[in-house]
Amino acid sequence: SWLQTIVENKQLMFDHQSITYDIHYKEKDKILWIDKERMAQVINNLLENSLRYTGPGGRISLSVYTEDHFDVIEVKDTGIGIPEEDLPYIWDRFYRVDKSRTSKSGGSGLGLAIVKEIITLHGGHIEVDSKVGQGTTFKIYLKPVSSEASE
Ligand code: ATP
Ligand code: MG
Image (cartoon, rainbow, N blue to C red; front, top):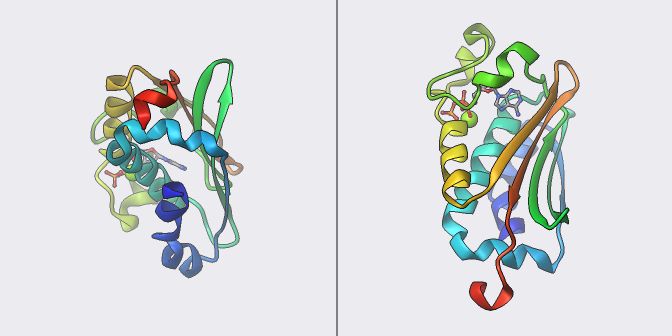
């Protein structure tokens, strides 16, 4: 599956940081083929964030499943988390939480702005749930497209 490929392309980074990963999906990942390139970009941005903000021994999972008639893409990590007061702003261009903690790890603060734009253009929405010191979960909700349309 192309989801597997996206994660395997990051194998070196996972190994280098001693981070383990799981992937959960069913045949349903077909539904995302409608704009595979853009969805790959979205998933890559989220995985790159998780890798950047999760320390050694952490865990990252990528799941695709159905919930309440939506197709959901979920990226979950056991990283440093995002303070509640910053959560409303993480989607803004160039916004980065506490520049001191992240300055050494690069990044310009554009990733999530791009993710949100792509998802919005696809008629979907994205939610975040995060706890400092525990981890972060991003969930993308997309309206399912019929399998004929995605073939
Ligand atoms: P870029 O994506 O342009 O390389 P970036 O990763 O800093 O830079 P975004 O992807 O837009 O920018 O994320 C914005 C900010 O949200 C990050 O700087 C970071 O502080 C916080 N953040 C995003 N994802 C996570 C995560 N999985 N865990 C902890 N903090 C996160
Ligand atoms: Mg980023």
